Amino acid sequence: MNITFIWPGKTKDVRLASLSSEYLSRLQNYAKADVIETRTGTGKEKSDFEAEKILARLPERSYIILLDEKGKSYSSKGFSEKIGNILTSGANSIVFIVCGESGCTKVLKERADMVLSLTPMTMTHEIARMVLLEQIYRTFTILNNHPYHK
Image 1 (cartoon, rainbow, N blue to C red):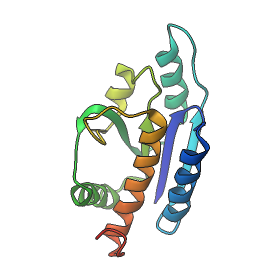
Image 2 (tube, one colour):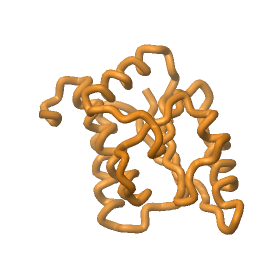
Image 3 (cartoon, rainbow, N blue to C red):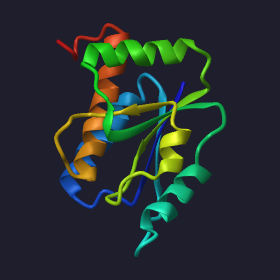
Image 4 (spheres, one colour):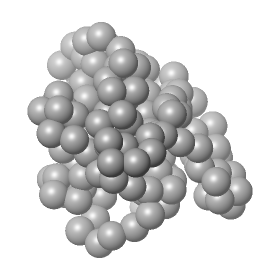
């Protein structure tokens, strides 16, 4: 199984980048996982530019999960069940998209197979990326009966 994370720009906070790298490294024990950092946009058309760059990087036959505050929320166990179902459904890969600070375009939302909310609270995109990576690692430990999730 391939897991791909796509977002505009690099994580600038070195502490968050380090934690993100740690969870990405741990995730490699369960799946091939990659991060694609696309170019960021500027000006009025920023979100359209970023969406175009994200759409161009989507692998074929992937199950697309878009993060958005208006998406569906899950408990960690409930989310692991959902991911387990996706894994057995025949998807070639799962792609997680975290949009930039300008938000997600309608085109990206329509392309997504699922819209996910990590929390109804607002957080920076850099923190959302790190939390997402930790939750995906947690998901795979739950699916593989690893004691990480207690």
